[in-house]
Image (cartoon, helix red, strand yellow):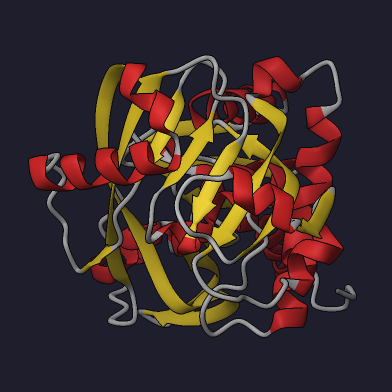
Length: 334
């Protein structure tokens, strides 16, 4: 029975752990994570599924990963598990102050994607010139991660809450190590291509807000309803690792979102959240053979998803599992 270690307890790590333990017969899988839900970066994600192409990733490859993820989320959204998993259909507007071309990825991957009409634009606040109406899903990781962990444990998976200082510690103990350590890889490997992008959000209670609104790719704010609250965002600050909410950022987010949806001024503030999204261009999904003191260590890397962690996690987990299978049995076909 193969022994496999997965490093990372966020949405990428847990998705990969579930795929590995369910797809490889007899696999004994252990997750090592310094932080687990509700304390991961994934827990704070707004969770909307946007079919974006991460920087440095070929469009066809991104489409494959996104399609695998959306098939997974879409099937859960219309199942009896939807409430427990925190996954639900969600529709809304992706709008711009200038003319923007349509997204072929969105057209081919999500439930619905169409251009908005002039009549629709006229009803929206501010002076938007173009936009698209989208039917997609949201994935609330504060519910989804515990659901994944329970699913993983039901197959005999183990989860250890501990920091991994060096991949060398697994030499001779595991047949394959799957590295989903995200931003931790900046020092773990170390990988100088990894960088952080600080994101600050506000969560409010506004049950009358039923549709999302994403303006100028988020630069003019975004409003995303979740199960019990609404996410207002956000910031994208490269190489900023400060996890303390910034009052100027909060004011900026609040004013932007209230311009998009004036009724938010009547909402109830719940809390602020800050996280650092782990970026790499391109995200790393590949096998590495390491030589440690004369011993061979097989590693499958799956990290650097940045703001596409939720959207890409299941698709890249499926592909990472295929790499694990091939590593265990080089004669197998991907």
